[in-house]
Image (cartoon, rainbow, N blue to C red; front, side, top):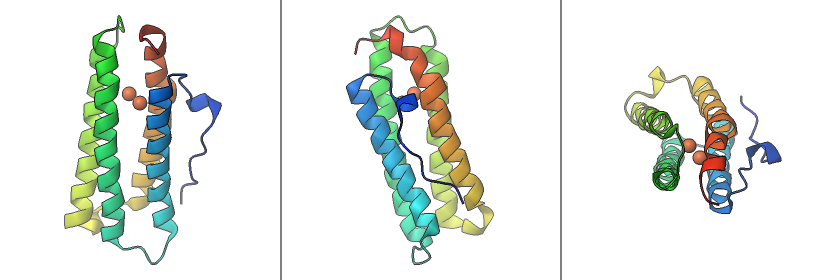
Length: 134
Ligand SMILES: [Fe+2]
Ligand SMILES: [Fe+2]
């Protein structure tokens, strides 16, 4: 089972509002990871945290995309596409967990979300930092 994500300087963009959001995303994802270790947690509990994650992801992506609007960030469209893909994936996971949980490999799910988030912050989000006003 996946280790919790530790916040560190490699995840910091230096933009306070963005770093605060990213910390919250890490916290919610860590809640998901903790729930997988908790034998008393039900699929419904897990689905509730995934719902929270899904909402926060949408909120945060909108905030980032607002920053791109008034910037000269050249990768705006690709970045938005990555956001839409992840939003869709999280909704799909949430739906599947509600309807047909046996079809879902939860270890794969948590590793995917963890890898996606850390990779996106470090490689994709960092690329807009020089282009937007802090
Ligand atoms: Fe982000
Ligand atoms: Fe992003």
